[in-house]
Image 1 (cartoon, rainbow, N blue to C red):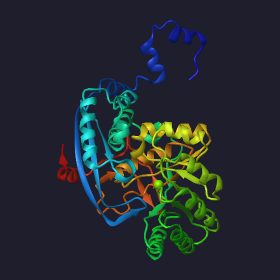
Image 2: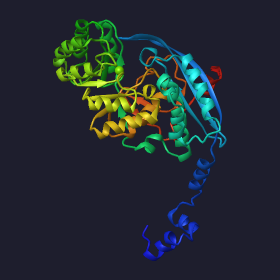
Image 3: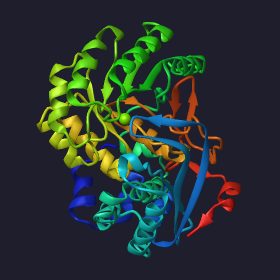
Length: 404
Ligand SMILES: [Mg+2]
């Protein structure tokens, strides 16, 4: 819209004609007026906390533990405007030290903090959760997801567009857990048959056996399919250096967390010797961890997870710190349902420097309780275009859940 100097003075300089400006600039459209009213008046009036258990088809084994079922927590944040937001906590004890019980206790504590508050003041609310983000990051992530769901719904936009909208679809890998080389080969062949072109396998046990696993899997998938590894802290520094040097012929894209989470200097030592790029996962929870890893030059890539950082808010901060250091990221997951995976997918789609995705948490779930949300076809994830997260929990599933 072109306006003359005279009009500019009339609208802005004199401040006499707000209504006219609104009309000229389109701010008076009924849709925008409704959104403005919605955002202004919203208050959190009720919070529902549920637990849920979903068995897995096959137990999922990694170097530091095995899971046979998902024991998660769901929160629904209801407002006086009629809008509500939903979020999921997926505690993974060996990595974040949380359980379903500790997440429920944390979720109840957070409920008391945020009732009657404005749900769109997310920075202030997340700040108010205080130290809970250190002890129960997944419970905080569930609330963070629900608040952003409300923000998107109030704005009438899918979250990935609110966050930056860099892309609307992307490829994900599919992960194979630790097993015998024969069983891992059978599993990756199934992944290829489903159309996946990026394979991640768990290693981090006996280094010699890990070499046999990697050789067998590379032979099974051929030279073109991408292959990434995750050692989940399972090797010592000398073991990691020994085994990664021998991985060179197998064209490994990167290896996640070869050594103990707290050993940043060990991670750096491995990185300087390894022909395989190193990705920090369990060493990276917060934006402050991101700065430390960058300062120490301890890794090539970051693996961001909502359940480690406490949700989208802190994950975006990590991605931005990484972007400023010209460092590329992956977004991974624990064993979330399609609710948590959809939230993570909005993050991936929004940012240019999130170039890898490992969003396969529900691949072994016996039940999918989510309506709408991301679609996965032949290894490609497509974002929903509905406002907010763009998904909901099946009411029939919700009815069966225990409420706190
Ligand atoms: Mg990992």
